[in-house]
Length: 413
Image (cartoon, rainbow, N blue to C red; front, side, top):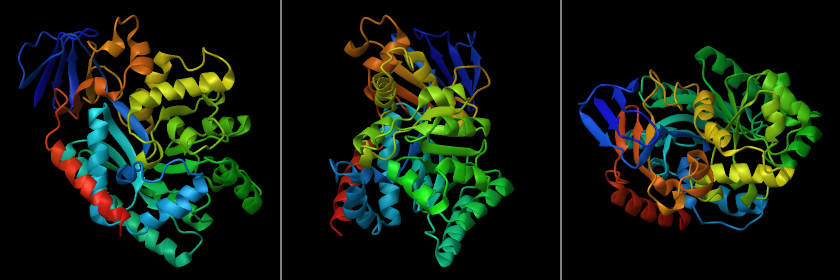
């Protein structure tokens, strides 16, 4: 299929053939699909590098609680009852929300991932997915987790939009032996590894008590810090840990809204990470702790939190934040996207510049980061296919209805 996007305010005409950008500034005047972008901007799609998509069913279910109470009293009891249908419908809801707010690829870690993959495929959204590996130092459980991980990896081999990764949950839920297996299997299959790292002070303190090391040093000694690792949060990193992450080529997903809402306390130290070459990208975390999956909103909070925390209004300016949400995210997921260039993946969005929130329009990047939200996205293109046009996604009413019914059933089981 071919697509021609013409008359955008910020770009020459763009011609898409198959799943790549074929030409920019093209003389092509006809295509299978023509999008008139008059009064709009064409931009690379956004990459949400840390989500638990199916937790959309738990949006607003348990708010304004301390983290440990939130987990132990609300989230874990409900998650123990999760079915494949919950994950399928919850992930469909998450995909719908992300498509409508300009996300074209997301990194997901959860359970029943074959069903999560089915949901993303049906809506045409690109994803890097991992089964959440948790063995709790139990040898029998570890074997079960290895089996489930392998089954998921094999289930998505050859799929166009779904790419498998490995999902060891954290240093406090995965044993040394579990991490050793993750490292070996990642090398064998050349798979990305997606984990949580230094999200809370408690995590750091307990890791030191149990191992004598902080989480970053612990993982470094296990040999799992490398260019295939995508770590989420990083709220409690020291300068030396940032240097260690950078020297090993690790990517770090910054999740400011979730971290503030759950009062993680620490703030991801962007200047240190940047200084030492860490590829910092953006994620929303799950909708149960955010409470939305809108990366436009996340970009604004990402910048403002850094400025306020460091008493420096020049930190993380708008155009730089935009790069975190686009090219850096695609790089973290080992995908050739997130930029508007010939030969790159045709994962693009068309943004309406005629809204009051972007008027008068002095600076495009400032408007994108500080002024608008995801409702500015008019059309979304993933892998050379239009998955939303004029803010309409096929079957969205049914997705919303089924998600409401499923969420009510889940919390009342």
